[in-house]
Amino acid sequence: MLVADLVHRCKTGLPSVSDEIPSAARIFEIGTGFRASKALLSAIELGVFTILSEQPLGLSILTERAGIAERGAKDFFDSLVAIGFLVRDAQGRYANAADADLYLDRKKPTYIGALFEQYSTAGFGLWNSLTEALRTGSPQIGTSAASHFSTTYGDAGQFRRFVKSMTAGSLLTAKAIAAQFPWRDYKTLVDVGTAEGCLPVEVALAHPHIRGGGFDLPALRESFEAYVAERNLSARLQFFAGDFLKDPLPTADVLVFGRILHNWGDDAKRLLLRKAFDSLNEGGAIIVYETLIPDDRRAHAAGLLASLNMLLWTPAGSDFSAADCAVWMQEAGFREVRAAALAGADGMVIGKKP
Image 1 (tube, rainbow, N blue to C red):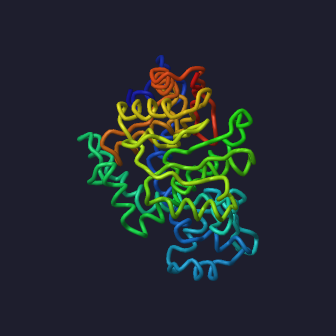
Image 2: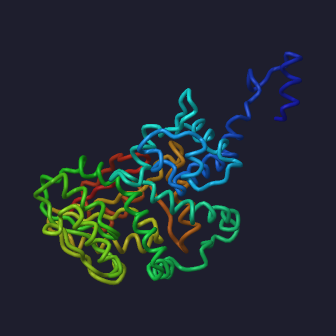
């Protein structure tokens, strides 16, 4: 019904489907949401939160240290205040909000900004091609998933940004898995597609009896071993080199697939789960964690939007629901399959090998 019709019905007392004219606020909020998003991404890229981590700064000093021009600076920083990532005191000095200070200061071990640096330099622009991806059903990066990873790993700068973004994107979820999963019942762990090894590191830090490591392409060995060594875990965690689509998976009590299955089509997902079943010790467990799509496909949009991201990046990848994953796990032979919520919109699906 047109707004004019609604107004006419209200004025004349005619029956209406609603007592109020629908607000357009939500449309504007979502439709212009890219502006706030990019303001945050640019602030991370420019190191604003790291600059402000030591002390509050006035406009001129902050502008100079961030390396930006005077025009737009005040609007930029005040926008960050308005959307809640900075605060401004009575003297006009800017400081970090609590969450920005904890998670977006590059000097802190809790820094997750590397993920958003990757979004700023690659993901944000790629989403401009969503309409074309929807029309064609094809990825918009110009390569297959496998060749994309090969290209990324072949460029030192892209490689460094990519592995750091994988760690940043996994950190909070890895901490949640370390806290929630019953690790006391298991002794060994291998994280499949481990990148720098964030997941096994968090589990090993929280549970001193756990040993194992991470499995990934040979190019990741140096990054993994450096990350593990920095946390004094080299004696307990090792790197396993291989291609999980081609090679057998390492044997362990627990195998973890974190944001791996969504890169591939359903046949490859099933293949990897079967390989995991074959490699697990008897009585072992598998953990799959992703930004899961709600089973009713309505509760929140995060998993659905993540799946559209896979449309942009991969030839066949997609996200999925816990129910979908449970079916694939049961087909592979897993039993006692259950799902659990994790950090943010992430969730994990757990299955046991008899």
